[in-house]
Amino acid sequence: MEPIPPRPAAPADTESNFDLETVSHCSTLNEAQMVVSLLGSFGIEATIDSENYNRMFGSMVPSAGGVQVQVQQPDVKAALEILNQDPEQTTLEE
Image 1 (cartoon, one colour):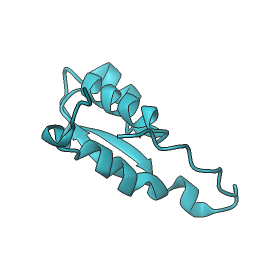
Image 2: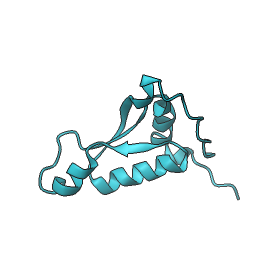
Image 3: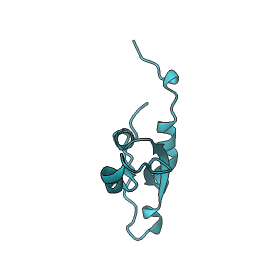
């Protein structure tokens, strides 16, 4: 899969720029950080919801929904396509 070029910056006065949607529920903070890194390699900015809380208390107080990775609303479709890619569909060119 080819990297997706970053989308142009939207006007700052658009309220939807700040709408975040969860695209992944991870069991650990490390797993969530790997998802953020993967999405970043495709030009999608992702954040970990309550990352500081999970750093401090994650191993002592597991959250009910896991560690949530979120992206901005315009990137949701692309992020879900990347995260739901079937590894068996990937072919290596020889």
